Length: 223
Image (tube, rainbow, N blue to C red; front, side, top):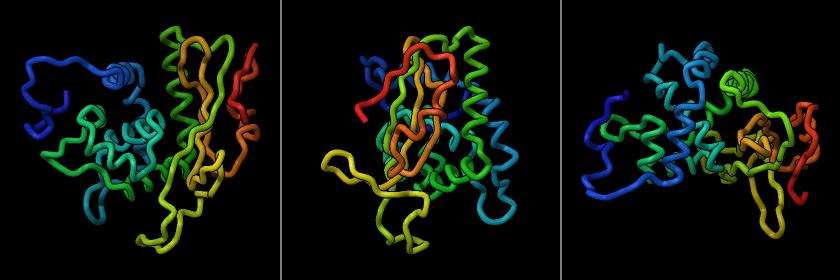
């Protein structure tokens, strides 16, 4: 159990109940094999020999998953951690000890996972863990994409946009960022495949990466 200072407590209310978000996070805390995932990333994670120590790997890993689950951009994830005690508790962020990870730190962690192709390895570890619990995709699959927004401004340290981000239009709205393409088991509701692309890549081009070949039915969005 992670120790927390008084700053991490939400108050002394007499009445209250857990929100659906908190219930979901409690379930994910138990269902996701965090120790195995951390072991996958740890060999590539900075050790802090030079400069200030990095943010704890456990925190960054959970922040990364919060981004996927709640469709949070890098600046959006930083903001959400300050706004939501439930997200802070899940990630292990204690504002009485240290600030929440900055958006630049979150961005660098995401790039680290992409550089070493760790997203697929983590997904495989989660799938194997779920299968060991008797949860396995056997019927249909639902596929869809969600936007991961990124700041389009060049007013930053590098003076340029993130080169991996692109612009796209959905309806009458323009977006700048990446797409997360997600495959979900139609019965269990568990995510079994995930891949990312530039926002300008059409969903249909990523479909082969989201299927395992044993589906009997596939559902997709209007696109």
